[in-house]
Length: 403
Image 1 (cartoon, rainbow, N blue to C red):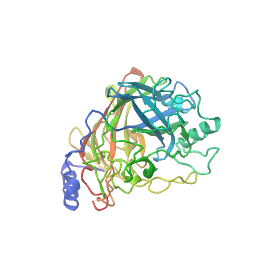
Image 2 (cartoon, one colour):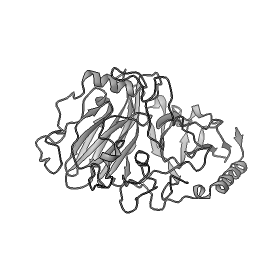
Image 3 (cartoon, rainbow, N blue to C red):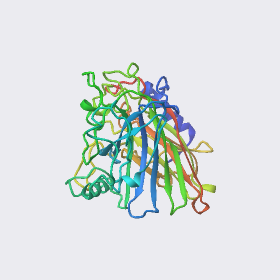
Image 4 (cartoon, one colour):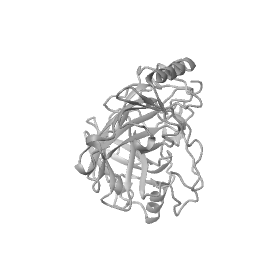
């Protein structure tokens, strides 16, 4: 439905009336500028498992400080369920490049060979240097199935969406850690889901530590389509004095009842994202949206979409003449991470901006942090572009139990 800017402003005023805190949430101390973090979020990846020249995602994990560091890489499905975890050791100011396609071939980055790993516990038992491929054929088959929403050889349920196109999808997190935990495929334990073991639960020990040192980047490659887009990884900095529980919204909060034990800065909840879906970028525009399911995701019988999906949103398009289009559906971005074409969202114009508001239409008090970016393709002209959106409302300081 196409509406005037006046009606759009009336709707905004209504939202401000029903939930004044939500309408005017400043960045405060929650801004996420380029810098170093204790966690990196790579908000979306895709790999064409049927064509080595098809889409792939290449990323880098980088140490911004002079002393060595240990990290835990966790691969998640587009429902937000972990499927693979492994350690990466970084020397001072080190760079580790990783092709996501290699992971789905069973190859894990081999790091730390011949180095002194004694500052990090259990690395003598679970060294991060590997003779590849590390994963067995069965583990590879399960990993590929999990990220296509299909039934694998080792489980009777599914953990992701099935698009039927041979593309593996998901997202990746990287945390600074204090110990090695080895390679874990299929229901890995040493991930943020296991909050009692992963974060400090009050016993004074933390596997994931609050050491702000990581930065990174990622690139989407498509040799067949002659396109590549990239962006910076999201640096989620930790502060154990600023983010402290109980009832404090943090990045990993859904895994420990929002008691802030992870101390990671939460992401914004409303974004403005400009797009160009024509002209020089006639190949089309996509929007990439990572969002928080708010509760731990569960597997489901294949073909069934489990709770809390589909996630709802309150989004709108605005063109260059300030005309507003409100999508008929409130499930534009229904899962934890997705790459969605602007054309499929039904906007009647090709140039403007999309406001992605992951607040529930049904309950404006329900918060859902998000990350939003766009990719543009020129098609046969062989160039493309990408950039993150602009956040306009934040979760900083909000109580997830009552807001």
